Length: 268
Image (cartoon, rainbow, N blue to C red; front, top):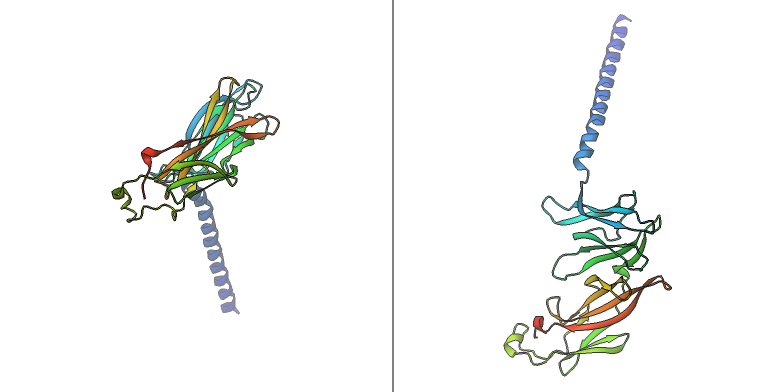
């Protein structure tokens, strides 16, 4: 009986020691967790700061663009946010890119500004991410989203070495691309006939605000590239001017124009 009691006491001591070890282990984990979280937390950096009047109260707000650097020395940022000094926060649907920034322009002609956000994808394609936000109400509204801009253009080469661009199936414009030197086309072989090359018009490359003095407000110019074969071969550019429509509640097409890029033209 005495031996049994001694064994039970030893067992109880061992269990207590195990319990103390487990408690110490749990405490150590709980103590270390804030340090681990702090080490792995994403650090937001301020990329751009502006001041703007965003509603009819006339109160000036400070607007910041913040993002998380992709890696230590990278210029590419993710988790980008637009922070307004009154506590509101806007997260663009495409919240990453190079050179993210913001500016304020009056697109509606109501005497206060809307926010124009931009960032770049990088790479040889040369396209970007563009938004316009109206912050007059408590919940900011998206006035322009680059993803929703509709590309209505198609392109094809003709047998006589011209590049036709079509809008909604109708001929919109023609580029004359014949007359290339044979030595220039040798990089694509001896072929000088364009008819089997597949040109196209990009969805959206660049967006810029432009001021209209007569209206005392801004419009948007949307740039699209007419591509001969690859992004390095820009035949020309199509510029679509968008103007905010109070009745439609969106940016409507006001004017479409084109420019040639003969200085950048590659011959096949």
